[in-house]
Image 1 (cartoon, helix red, strand yellow):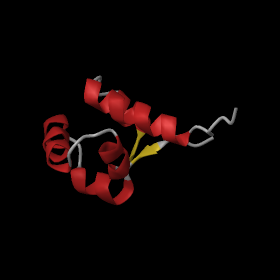
Image 2 (cartoon, helix red, strand yellow):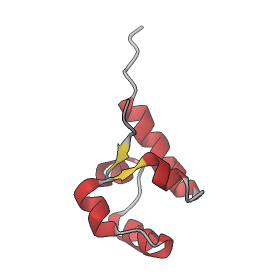
Image 3 (tube, helix red, strand yellow):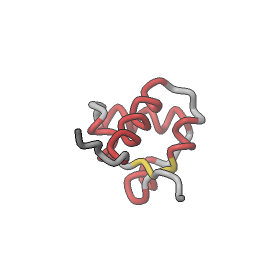
Length: 70
């Protein structure tokens, strides 16, 4: 199974803004343009230890899970 790739759509779904995300990427030394074009593995964001990064990954994981029907 391949690793979940986080995209800008996941960032937006988590309620974060693109401008703030661009600034955060710069502080982390991550390439924002590459992220926009290709996304990033969830493990890369998790490795930052940042609470907002964890929020985005959690949101993406929730969207990736098959929905349970009751």
